[in-house]
Each structure stands twice: as C-alpha cells, then as structure tokens.
Image (cartoon, rainbow, N blue to C red; front, side):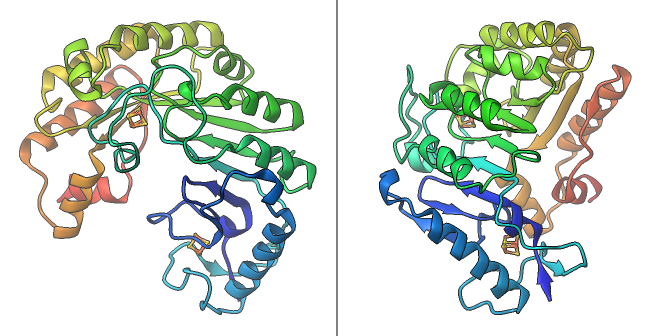
Length: 327
Ligand code: SF4
Ligand code: SF4
C-alpha cells in the first residue's frame, strides 16, 4: 500500500486551485478549481470526502483521478502512517500582488509585473473565511500546524494581519513569512520574538543600485533598515531570518556584489544566508547536463568561503545545485 505525508498533511491555496501538495510543479490532487470566493459555497464536507478518497486511491494504487503515479514522494505505507482528517501544513499563495517587480518572479505570468501600492484584496479570493471554516470544522491540527506565506507579497495583502491574528488565537506552531521586507510588519516582529516564526527574503544584491535594477523599486535602504529592526527586536543572537542571494546572469554575478552582500549581513547581525542560481537557468543547466560556467563556480565558492569565515549558517545545496556545482 502507498502513502504520502504531503497528501495527508498539506493544503495549498493557489490563485486558480486549492490543492494538496505543493511539490514538483504543483501537480498534487486538486480539491477545488476556480473557487469563486463565495464562502457560502465552500463545501467543507466535500473537502473531507475528497481527501479521504484521494488517500484511499493512493493507498490502492488507483491513479485514475490523482496525478501521483510517478511521484517520488509516495512511499510504502508504514505502521504509523494513518489517515488524518486534519491538515498540518498550509501554503498561502492565493494572491499575486506585490510592491516590487523582481524580473525573475513567477507571478509575472499572472500580474504582468504590475507593482501594487497600498493594501489590496487578493485578485482571486480571500483565504481568511476558509481558514476560519477549517478551524471551525476541526480540520486543522492546532497542536502541530505550520503556515507558510508565499504570495505575492504579504505586505500588500489586506487579510495578512487578520490571518496571522487568527492563527495566533486559534493555535499554530510555526509561521514562515516570505516577504521582500520593504515594509516593516509589527506582527512579524512579535512572532520572531516569540520564536514561532521564520522570516525569508531574497535580497540578491549588496548595493542599492543592483537592488533597484533587479527589483524595479528603489527600496534597498528600507529593506536593510527593517532587517536591522527585526534582528534587534527579536532579542536573540540568531533569529530565524534567512536572506537569500539569487545569482542572476549579467545583473549581480560579480565578486564585488557577493562580498558586499556578506559584509552587509554581518554588519546588521543576520546569521543565516543562502545562495541560489536563478531557477530557470539552473533547471536548464540540469536538464541539458551543461556545465556551470567557470565564473559561477568562482562566485559559489566565494559565497561559501565568506559565509564560513564569518560563521554564517547557510543551506546545503539542493540536488540541482549539487549537480551543477559538481559538474
Ligand atoms: S504522491 Fe506526490 S503528487 Fe501525490 S500528493 Fe503526494 S507529493 Fe503530491
Ligand atoms: S518580492 Fe517576491 S512576489 Fe514580489 S516580485 Fe519579487 S519574487 Fe515576486
């Protein structure tokens, strides 16, 4: 019999679908397609029924209605792998608006790069009434619940604060905030201080000019100021704040930019950094089995050397990164 913990635990809110897992190009079974945002029509009983059916289809290897046949995440069902009606991991991805315009952003296919000012409702549907309903119907595991904010950027989403307040009131174990950090959020600071949050962002630069070129807004100084503030207010030596540098061809792929990035992180007290290669380029190299250009190898080594020297924690490279670094 098969089992998949993603199917058992995860609920993902995308603009066009509400589905189970959020892996491998979002291929998991779909609960609702093109939900119209009317909570009166949101059928929690149907959600329960569908989850049960997906689970038993997977168990029995019946792939007619679930796209799991070739998925590497399914495994042989173990003794402790029991069906649960409750979800333990929620990805919030139901809006695409953002107050900057990273040229590599996936949301560009939805938003055409529009930069949003002020607070807005999701252009698709609100997640708040659904989350309320999930708690009410006892479909969230209050004792072991992780929330991941993706988006769009959470700072332009009207329902962002009410959502976090609801999680804090009803029960949550961990909230992962992904944001560009252009706007300081008191509620994020509070969660970091209480050690129930992580904050993740991509800075991709070590200077204001490069930042502006990549993000299409002149907000580098605001971001650095906000990062400093979060570190200070967390009252911890090593708050869970991860700052990413994505190497972008012809934009920030210089030793100077990486050196300045690491220097800035050290100066403002950030202890966790990570390095990526722009995902489309990385996948292209990976799929075509093309060797990574020499200058990229040099930059990667520089990044890891400087991180080690400054005792910064950095993620180990994933499978794609590993392949391209080693090739
Ligand atoms: S088997 Fe794969 S596709 Fe299916 S739910 Fe699990 S992770 Fe998603
Ligand atoms: S901050 Fe995130 S959502 Fe906004 S443009 Fe950049 S990658 Fe896209």
